[in-house]
Length: 211
Length: 164
Image (cartoon, rainbow over all chains, first blue to last red; front, side, top):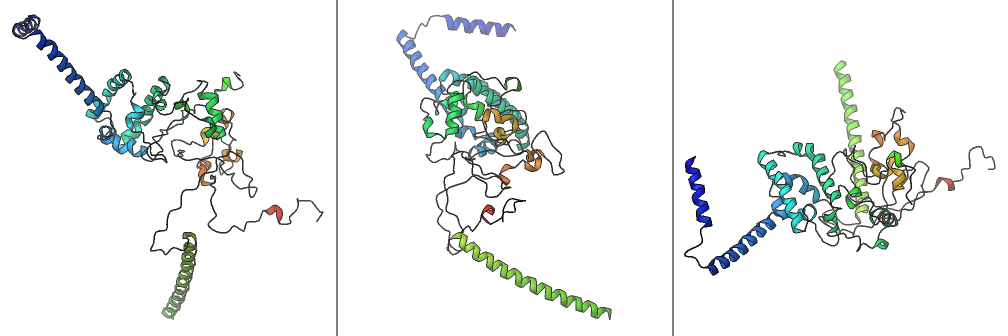
């Protein structure tokens, strides 16, 4: 006990004692260069975890959600634009991204303890996992969708009349956000028996018309 | 005596087998010819060129039914719609509870009735898989000529109508 205490005391004295042999220029420049190196390495590592290759290096992702993505329009389409995992699941803004990454550290826990080791376990968790994503996208007003699909750039006259009507009534008015109606666009859906579509009007509001 | 009967039975069976075999050969030849027609006269050893995918008709205009009990056609694209034991994208608009806000026509009342005639509060399991009967349309050239005649143009009048 006294050993540890004396070691801490020594470390404190070492850290707080003014440098006797190192120049001020060395310390400031060294600190600057060291900071740059650390920051670069940190962001490089962060970006490395932000790739599709990293996501599907785990069988949980590769065998389940990735296989489903490959069959959708976000994977192959006429214009050849592809959305990879982080495009939809990680915010592009740095602070939001760090927050999301900290949240996602729970997935490391799940990986280590094998929460989703089999297809069966994945299917059992599917509703819960989907609800997390729906809640997240609802809370940030479908931010990841809007990174590519902005409502300003949306030409309603190029849409079918039904789509244009619905978008101008619900999306442009801010009454609904993308995820309210467009669930299951990139993966298969869980059991939707208790999940109503975004346009469902609850019984008590049936005859109520705001406009 | 008995063994002779069995012999006669066997010959009968043999004749039947030969007749069935010939019928099968004729049928398969006929089918093969039809197959060639649908493939467009390309020998089966070659892969025919894939035509570009026709575009779906998405104008939302209801098509007239060709006969009264024809399942209505889908006048929009259903590309990517999920229809599984977990979810039914069609019903998320066409089910009774959702039609007010979606503006889609409600599925027919027959779809709530089981095969025993029992009325249910939700779609009957036998009617769950919409695309078994209802299909979208594409603007494509028919593979074979269509000789269908509308029954209203076949000289049949209204029941009880004795003008004819």
